[in-house]
Image (tube, rainbow, N blue to C red):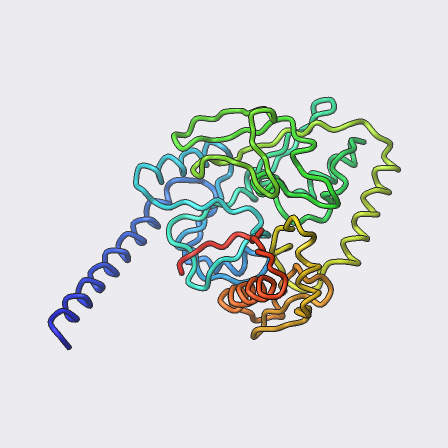
Length: 322
C-alpha cells in the first residue's frame, strides 16, 4: 500500500468512527425528547408501500404539534438531518437507509374536525380517513381521492390528484411550521401549486390542511366514491407493493401509454417489475431491493427517450444514503 493510500484509508476510518459517534448521539438525544415512540435502526421497508429500504438511524412518532416542534428545534440546533415521513406511499428509500431522524406524524397527528362546510385535518391523517369522514358528514368534493393511500400532509406536499382532480381544487388553507418552530397559516391564494408539487421552503413542515367542501346527498357521494374505487381496482395493480405512479404525465400524454407502446409492460429486473396492468406502476414481486427498482426506473426512462424522444420526470421521491 502506498503512503497516500494509507492516509486516505486512515482518514476514512476516522470519518466513519466520527459518524458512528454522531449517530449514537442522535439516538441518546431523541429518547428524552418526546412521549411518543422512538425506534432505532428501524427498517424502512416496514414503513413504505413499496416494502424496500434500509434502516433509519432514528424513527420518531411525536404525539402532537408541541412534540413535533421540540424535535424540529432540537434537530436544527444540533444540525441533525430530519426527514418527514407520511405513509411512505410515494417514496423509495435506498437500501442503505436514512441517516439522522425520520419523523412520522401518522400516530399522533391525525385529528379531523368539521366547521360548517370546512374540514380541517392534521397532516398525519390518511386521505382515506378524510374521505370517509366527509362521507359521514354529507360533504362532497373529496370523492376522487378515495383509495389514494397517502396522508393529508403528503397529499398536499405533492398536490395529489386522481381522475382529473387535485387536492388544491378543494383547499382553503394550509398550516405550516417554519424551521424556527413558528406556526403560520397560508390561504390557498398565497400557495404556489403545480402538477404534483407545492412550492415550500424545504425545512418547513405541513401541519394541517383545511378543505372547503359542499353539502351533498350522502347516497350520491357514496355512488361517486364507489365509481372511483372500482376504476382504481380495474386499472391499478393493488395486489402487489408499489409506490403509485412512478412518472409524471408529460405534455405528450400519459406516461403509462408510452411505456406500454414500447413493450415494457411485464419487464423485470430481479424482483422489480413494470406492472402488466398499468405501465406507470413498478411493483415489488416480493423480495425486490431499492437498487433493482431504481435500475428498472432508469431503464424505462432511457428506453422511452430513445424510442419516443420523451423525457419522463419522476413523480416518486427517492431518499436515503446512496
